Length: 192
Image (tube, rainbow, N blue to C red; front, side, top):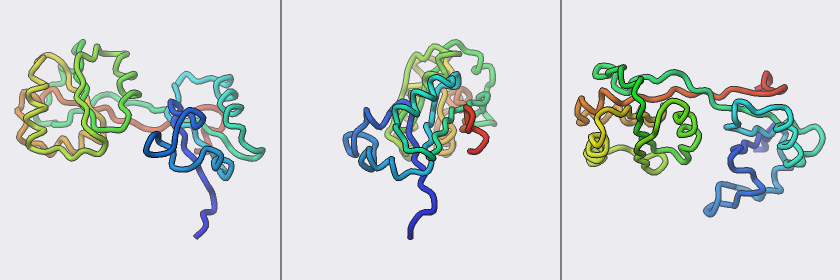
């Protein structure tokens, strides 16, 4: 089976000319194979990316004529509770946040949160981690270090964390996640 269209996604924080093949990096193919792409999408770009930055990316990629290069950013919505029944929304207005994640690269989320909170502690699990009873104890001990800080996580992690019914209400009440969506930027954004 041959694909009708090859689309390559590149994380803006990991340009292919500065990345390596797995397992040392995140590349699944040789960098020169990008020439087979019909469309390249540079993801997780800063929302304030301008035409000059996009032009520099296009020059850096050296794509043949006719290959579309598009750009996307992450848009975060307002925090939502992981445990709606126990949630105390006053924590959203705290000055301090704990960051709880199990994603490959929490850097973009951290950067966004720093606009609103001082991140006083982070607890990171491996990507796609399935939270267990043992993890609930670890999260509880970690969270109780500062009972005034908001606990922020990702939308993806919130789904798995919501199964940890053994977390105490005092931890559940502070646990929120940020809904995220991908938004196109630039001239080609409407085609995505």
